[in-house]
Image (cartoon, rainbow, N blue to C red; front, side):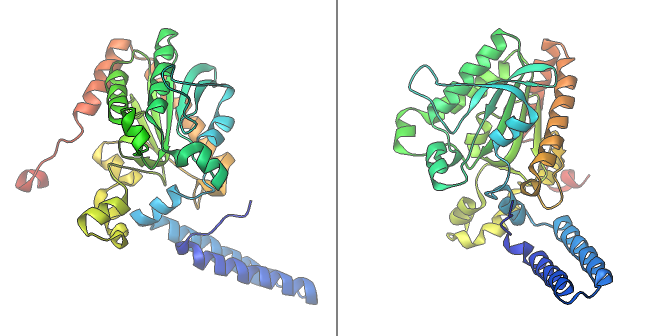
Length: 324
């Protein structure tokens, strides 16, 4: 798979081009450049490591949005078996941006709720660019209640810029659909794991994000607003998106320090889009480990911890008290 480079990856791309020229020259003239090739390969590895060890918040947002990054159905196909998609909210229709169904991970049967983007125009139109309508959230809730009925854990894969804000969405009460999900997920009597695998945008992400364990991939982000929208509001100009991204504290490390997420799942060097199989292996391992942990708790303890987890969000200290 040819990976489309991002702007900050251009130094790596240039070194790779020079390496290929060196190899081609060696083949054409039958000259041994083995030492030079090894030196160039070492330089490429060091450059890539240096770049990815010092990524800015905005650069991580770019990686999270990479069109070749694994999407929800890519992870479902690699981390789960016996996937059976279930359709419709039994009220209005089926939302292709929110694939949901039954699957098995390890030895556990579970309900999987996901948000799916597209890689080309046709698929993006089908999936509405990963932006779910109210019927998507109602379908998700229908399957969560099914999970509760049959005591199956719920796994939510979050990847959306936000819920769809169009007229049809408002006419069918998108805010109410998300609010009901928040309330019902808080009291759902089964273990819930949510993972931000790409973009975690606003209420669209939170609508399936109330969970006992909230995980996030290393280069994903989770935020109340996109950097561009924040920039447009505060600076009246979207060009300040990189500054907004830093201020929003939306990266995995920031969220871990703030207690918003419980675990950061590592990605292959250079991002999940460079090795789908390895990225899925890391995610699958984290899901199995966390499911094992929370499934061992009694339901009363699980609900208590879930409530306390979200009650703590938003607590902060100011001035002298903050520095103590």
